[in-house]
Image 1 (cartoon, rainbow, N blue to C red):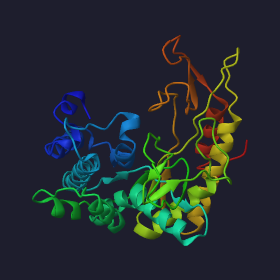
Image 2 (image 1 turned 120 degrees about the vertical axis):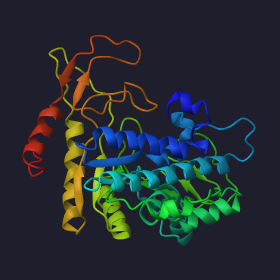
Image 3 (image 1 turned 90 degrees about the vertical axis):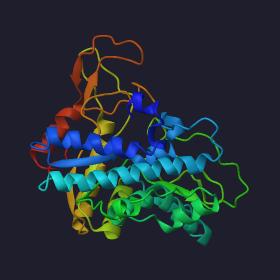
Length: 350
């Protein structure tokens, strides 16, 4: 959200729907002759679920029901997305457009029935709310019931229901880094407090986060689950039967630049080998995949973990506050991925 519009209430202002649709119109007018695939709002579910952590949540002064305000803002984003998708089809009939949430399939911590219910709750709140709305134009029933219980259901303006029904994405774009695991919350725990986009303490009475003992983690504590990538793809395709486009997948790590200008990041190559192999298997399961986009080409400033968390195939010589030379250095993963591209994903060998 541009700062000038954030000062006018951000997504809490009903006019934000029109701001976004107008922005989309300008983009379609100026780039529609070249851009054929469009994404709406990157990781809308992260903006909603982790807004305080990443600095995107704008609460009006005197807000007394934070949950209601958050999901009203989320509603405005959903309506804006639907209207932008409809406008794309109107202005660019040969283009394709879809959402781009961050999807993590949720596992129950055990085979206890209550843990399975908790996983259904978390899946609904984290994943299906956004995709049910993008594809079908309706609120997920589990999430709506939870919002009703907390006096937090969003208010519909005139025309919202019709607009949401007319969105019709052509594909689903999604970012994937790992799965999640949770267990039942009996409603007595205090699960408040910050959590980033790939971890969650939970929601009292719905679920609480659980560290999966079967998965290794990155240096930044994110679980690594290549098979979960396949499971996530299978679940999405079985629910929505739309082509899938991986819009982000990658490994954030502390990279070391050697004196001769090299970065030996075999750990990143291994991450990509394991994950791209699972995309192949998902295709063999009958899932339709449009493509795969790694995150990222060049080291950049991570959302809330700064420059030390590097994702790129290309190293940038700078740190948190010292810009240094800003020179670029190709990592070992750069040359490996160049080979992967040339073989259209067939050659994943070192």
